[in-house]
Image 1 (spheres, rainbow, N blue to C red):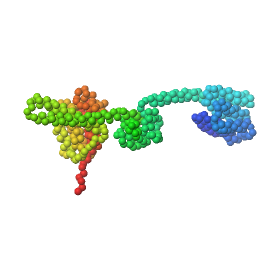
Image 2 (cartoon, rainbow, N blue to C red):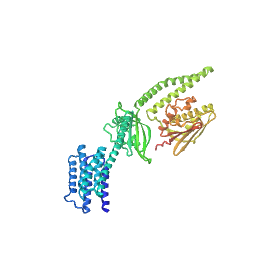
Image 3 (cartoon, helix red, strand yellow):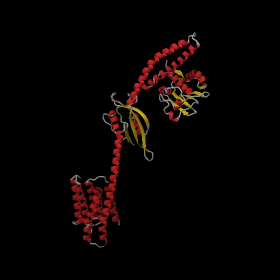
Image 4 (tube, helix red, strand yellow):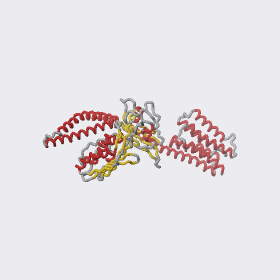
Length: 541
């Protein structure tokens, strides 16, 4: 029995290797059969069987000739010739068995499998006919129909035919699946190529797996010399300011390949201002069943027209605001001069006060529009000087008290005696005034607004907490967007155009700080501004 065990292992390994092969090259097909025949002969020689000049020896010669045929032809054989070669292999098995020490009938399974795989049910029919005519019948003629020889002669064609039918059926199913997959792939490609969004799929290592046609256009602008298909490659890619080249770690694909998810990352691609395109990039990670990072998908939306429209709008707003500010400033000045005339009657004075109040409101709105236009074109310009932030906050609170008192809202302040810093006094005053105005606007009479200034973790922290209407979670993410007003503010007809908080954030960020908000609808809001503490260093004498 050890001989059988020794025989099974190499045959099983060879069969597994051949069946798993995806090639249909006749050289590989015949090579697998030749290898099995060689192993069979070698094992028989090791077991003490003498081959000599016999039918098994002749079968080996025929197999080698068939292998030579496939090699000489370089595998360029017609299907009919391949079919004939496989039938010849079956005949070789039948020939080798016409000897008491001949080859194993199991070898017929390999050409049977290939006939089923290459020619389907027709190949299985050929297998049935060939094994009966070339293996079973000659074997019975040679050995007779007695005992075990009859069983072997019948079983070999049956097993070979079943194996050929099985693989033929399996290949039909595989072909159907492949046709379905191919159809779905084509539908997916057609769908992806019709959308007006550039799509990129990365694998876990940051290699490009798929790119649609729209993104090819963006790639042609960003990488005119070609792209290596790896995330983070540098090219003609600029930041949102349209002038700063993006470094590798700032590239959207590199960030996505590190597992980062983001929305609306603005970039510009191309070096020619006339053909440059502005893109808004979003990324989402792909995870496997275990939750491990397996890749990322990115979407590139062309927002060039939107960005250029915004530039035109900002230029228009800035131009009109400048043109309006001069005559409006003159109107305010002359109205205030008239109000200083003690000879005016009461009705005229009240009418002039209405004019003054609305002119001041228009002047503040124009100033806000100009500030917004400046923030959109780049960082807010700062003129920093040594200033006491504690004194500044208390002065702003004192200036707001009359309006708070008229609205019936309590205003409290808590601040240290002094907090010297380097900052733009006028801009920070604007921040504090905006937060105080915002808190009063959304608070009801009888409530309280608390202003607190403290030092936390080496940073100045200013908080303005109110007991007003609060902000919903849906509105909170858009709160600092210019011209945004919450639904509650619109429902209550609260005055404003939604510029104050946007300007406030721009000023705070220009100082290297950040602004946050905590709010609960119907309970109140707390705005928190954190600024780095920078102190002027006295010059050495």
